Image (cartoon, rainbow, N blue to C red):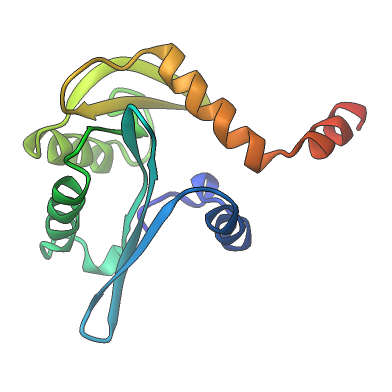
Length: 161
């Protein structure tokens, strides 16, 4: 998929989150062939395009454009946000990051100049639609996700361990 292995949430955990959270999971097919999937976290103020993955061997064939066009149309009721690996951070896949960034810019997203670094990877937040996106908005999303990702009893265990 489109995400480097170290950034992927284990499939079982991802499926659990989809069951427990108000997430929109969509799988895309061309006939019988699986193309990829998206996960959108719809919120009151904006939609967060959390996962947008197209099978690696199918990239460059227009599927990503079709899927993104579908997402933009489906979620046009409010601003849309996504985070991606920074195209400025030195890394092994810098060219891929730059192409991805250009793809989103061509499709109407803009840089918010809000960044977050997690496990040594810097993410840039991009936005489409009216309004602004702040570091506090990002922190709010993370706090909401942590309620599902690390339930209170797990946090206590981690703090003890």
